[in-house]
Length: 142
Image 1 (tube, rainbow, N blue to C red):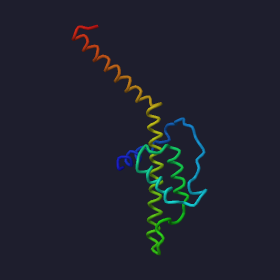
Image 2: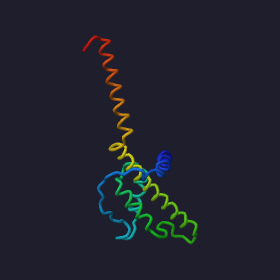
Image 3: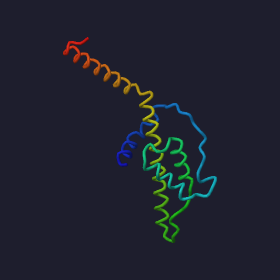
Image 4: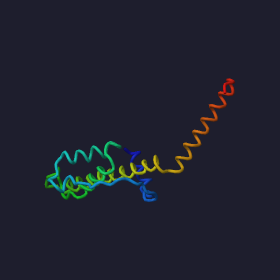
């Protein structure tokens, strides 16, 4: 999880330096159309803790919904600091969901359109082919 956070922080500064074409779907909100339920929060926590479990649209939808939720859901006490802590931690989960979606988009870009990666892959293939040709020459096969 720390590695994901570090990678995401490094990438956040340059996230807008590229564009990825992806289909967009209308995001529905979990909490705006119904009262928030613990299972909705569970999905947000599940997705934030398991990279690749949820697609980009779901990650962004969950983050939006967490940010829209006001007040406390679990910490129903007279101690204000507990409610503040819940709200702060919920915001942290929303941020992790957004960072994960950004990282997934960057990974898609790397796989689909990154010229540097394509050049490295091509160079590796040429190098491997040359090594195979040298081995074949050593054994005298053509």
